[in-house]
Amino acid sequence: MKLPRRKFLHLAAGAAALPSMPQIVRAQTYPSRPVTMIIPFAAGGPSDAIGRVMAERMKGVLGQPVVVENVAGANGSIAVARVARTTPDGYTFILGGWSTFVANGALYALPYDLRNDFETVGLVSTMPLVVVARHGLPANDLRQLIAWLKANPDKASQGHPGVGNIGHVAGVLFQKETGTRFQFIPYRGAGPAMQDLVAGQIDLMMADPVTAIPQVRAGTIKAYAVMAKSQLSSAPAIPTTDGAGLTGLHVSTWNAAFAPKGTPKEAIGKLSLAVMDALADANGRKQLLDLGQDVPPREEQTPDALSRLQRADIEKWWTIIKAANIKGE
Image 1: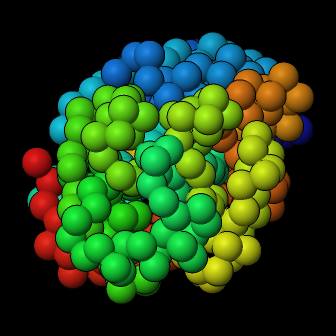
Image 2: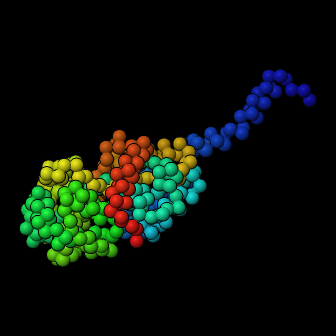
Image 3: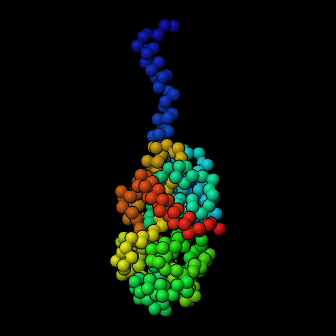
């Protein structure tokens, strides 16, 4: 049977369009199933708490559940390696941070490249450290603390949550910037270190606000400065290092979302929008603030802004870590 020319052309055009239709449908419907968020540390910790706040609110934009999966071990590098090997289809991303996506590259021989094997999705939160000391230490402000440390070289001790941790590296930078010398005492976490600081067994900590601020409020330890450009909203009475006389000594840890290299741009865009939408939610922001986190401005939450932050921190901290000969345990 002979088809009329117009009908033939119509059918041919429809047939030619068929191969591209699945791609269009996929692009329009991503994600069509649940998305997995990998947390590189055990359940119950601060990273896990932040991840669960984000997962609950990201599903609004994604239209699918965000399933949290904890993959702990080797200071987070086991989880990061797993994500690096994951199919880059947008259905798996990781909530990493300063330790996993900056410090580990200087501390360990990794089976992946932190700068080239991942796509940046968005910055979730930042958390500056606080310079704190035992209650009985004679210095009453940061300048007096530095003077006391210089007058007592190698006699003071700083506790930290483990070799290569942000608190440890911050102490190394503090020594370099102030010309002071003191001993480093590693602990199995910030909690045990803070217990010994409260008990007067150690002299100093460069501590996270979640651990430090309750003790500062209770009057059991002294706080000298926030290692950031701006004060903590949860403790506005504590001056910044700039305001306390040590200009430019800024140390913050951060949490951010990364995906495997090669994840489609459409998926990165949707995930990034979901991150920003979650951070714009008033209840979500409050929960993060209650966890001691600062929510960055929207322009700092983008994939490009996160990429610049990560590369700048790698350039800064790898030099400091390697010069101090700090090795991962």
